[in-house]
Image (tube, rainbow, N blue to C red; front, side, top):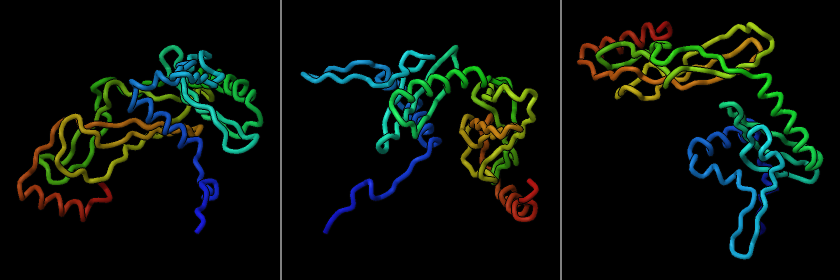
Length: 225
């Protein structure tokens, strides 16, 4: 019996998936992220040279170059400039030299064309979420500190559409500080930003009357709450 080689499985990954993976690595293992900016690693008699051509440009400190087939080069890079961090993904480039040239241009555009927009101050209530079986029907939602999103500078004065997304009604237990929802903001240029929302209060279990009332309300008016 012959085994299919991995390339025959036709696995695929999108640029968005690679960006999410990079963000996960950076947030989950910050103590190891500095390894990506190390230009030279010596292990015994072996020397490994970091082939990321963007290191040091626009604050780039990671992550990885690669290719999926002949004449299809790419990179996942991240840079921190003036306190703002961007993640960039390039793929399908014809030669390694294009990685540096196109990557530098894209980073320049990103830092110039995007800006931070503060939507809510720290401790400001963003919305309320419906709770089932608690000592109250709604729990206020806040961000962890001020809520700031990144939006394109152009066109100016864009209209924003905000949605609070969660599995309603929320089920107990709910403690203050629990992540229970997401604020999704869509601009008129179709850029999307998502920010986690947290319960600003602890919700205790309600009595049997409250649970019964919540069940009736949920089944009769659930679409409107």
